[in-house]
Length: 416
Image (tube, rainbow, N blue to C red; front, side, top):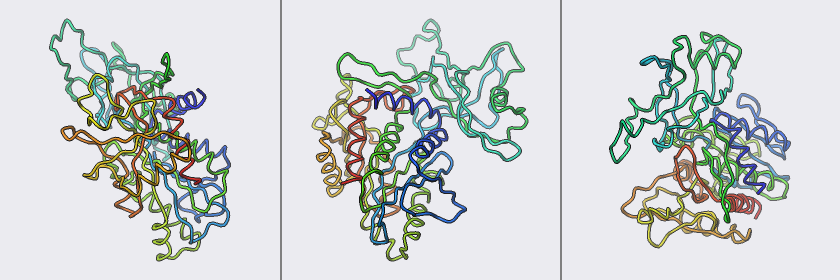
């Protein structure tokens, strides 16, 4: 399936949130979008525009005739995924081994990070002030302890003692900063600071004997970033009245409280400055928000056949049966009756099947950027996503048809 293979290519090009933002920008460049810099005059001329801030990217398409009487149709997602983030002084040695000091980022499913070849990727700042993106390829590994030395029934790795990957052995001069410096063509001492994280070096795969599945890392939430990007390519070719907005935030996995995250000002900045460029004063901008809506797209839980008791007995989303509308009466999701109806009407127009997820009362429920966006901006918001297994694993699993359906549903939401 072409869409599934394109998703795999997108994930391979996005080993970190910084790379994901850059890849979205690269593809938007090819579509004719222009990059907006925040220290320059804001543009709301008809056509496509985008802004990159750190590991976040926001794109907006302004149709012909857009004005202060228009609204915003927003699709929000996030570029970051759980992993092992490098500490500021990453190189250390233990018993002849050269290792890398890491901090667990987000709610990583720890046991899945063992026995995988790991890439180090992200942003590096050199002493001359320049910003670089780096992706080393497979240089690290987190080896499991042999069963002969660990006979407990349940494997519970300690984050500090057991989650430090190995780089090499018997080479005390080796360091991960040297590897990064070589790739950038600088000395390790020229590296001033960095935001670096590990990623599974293996490419994704399409597999299955019937229903096609995709297995890859970082699909929470690059599935939604990819779907909204592909939908933007389609929707920007169709005439409509509202401004289309694609917001892919960073730092969702650690609470979104950063200037790159949904809890920060980036989306509000884009909406306010775009509204002002369209001639809207403060009162008219609030009127634009009242005419707006937001789809918060993030991975959803498919029922796990071996752990069905963890799911609500009457809400069993199944992989391969369509995107999931997520509802939580304790407001862990932003969906309400109005926004559920809005989203599922778009799905029906696109001939996309829908499913609904509600958490089991005895099982904690995660959250998304949806409630944050709704709270900060007062814009009607619904939470949706493709059903997934192995969420927060180093390698997750989704249905290829669900991914395509999510793209089609977002495109319909934008063009209806």
